[in-house]
Length: 318
Ligand SMILES: [Zn+2]
Ligand SMILES: [Zn+2]
Image 1: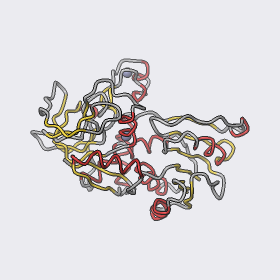
Image 2: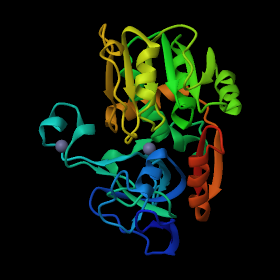
Image 3: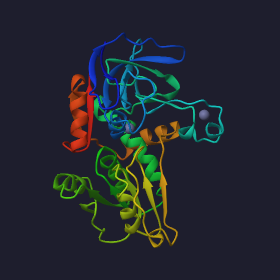
């Protein structure tokens, strides 16, 4: 089969012919229909998140059909957990120290076929074409988990208006929240995109919002945004860091944290997040904006993501 291989940090993905993977017990062989790209893939390419055993097929937002019965399933970042450790038993399988992640520890979806543990596959809601469903699996799921950490916040700030934020603004609006979108300075396209999806306000990431926020989610991998977001939230407000990696957070005055403001991170997802969000998405209904790339252009897709050359999400189609 055709696949795009990650061979090491700093090296471009390489097109290769490799054997179709063989499913083991409890695993499904999937024909990949579309696979979303994600900021995490850039962190893997750059070595900010480690791929322990290259070569590896990246890609962790897979929409595929099961070879044999044609069922359509989605495969997320969380590919396997031990089910036995303290975290797993406490309902926090996202924090399992033995977890294996799709497209990092297990070959992912930048290929014609993939194998996945059936227990970690989700049914895909009807009404979403394959390419439009793919971004629900990480951008949507991690966004949803991040939103849960914001409690009942009415005024919600989103720092970084990419794939996750463009889904989350729709969910937040359907819950009656107001969304304040912060983009790269001067990114008029992203700001117009945010307003078009229902954001109350859109502006540059360094700007203060027109009124204090009840919570903010930082999706951009820029630690300098954390103290900025902290200063934008009202007393009692929360800043949620939604990415797997961020540059260092600069020091800030204690008064910025004072009055019961808090900072927390969100790591990975649980299967419960997946089931809940994939039920919610068609009810909103969430509409995803996707840019399609052929499999062999996965590297171009990632370069475009890095440069902010598309709005919304992007998928690779084998
Ligand atoms: Zn992701
Ligand atoms: Zn575990």
